[in-house]
Length: 222
Image (cartoon, rainbow, N blue to C red):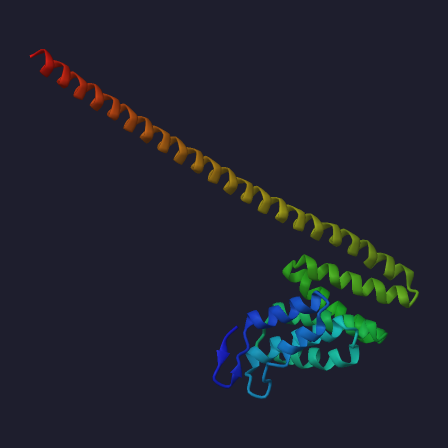
């Protein structure tokens, strides 16, 4: 974290640390870091990320009425800067919040907007989340056809995301395995070099000993 003259400076690391503490079910510790952010002095580019992160903190705690204003204000700032990736993220956050509050019409509206944007950018995790929200809302409304439609798509995307994650983990494992093998090969080569050097030293010592012994013998004979 970066310490500023006016106190504890906001940083990406600080926000991510607060989010990790939230996911680790340590909300009090997470709130400590959120409270270090001075929203009155922050500019939009920092404030918008703080608002969404803090909103997701309250969403995690199921304090939906508290989370919603953070999301709505953050959405305005993201739209001002035309940050489509973050707009997509917060649209689905808002949809989740409205769904939890059982404000179904608003949940459907924001979920569809978020899903449309996610489909355009082919962001699989966000597409999955969009389908899941719409499935749960229509299921609650007992609209079986729509619920089944979104549920099938949700399951498909859920498996696709899991497969991508599995491939990513496998690729990481293969990469780490290759590094480990190269490291072992390097260690073996270094050992072989040391053994060769030692053998050369022994050989030179033997040659030197034999030469010295020969000189001594010859001098005695002479």
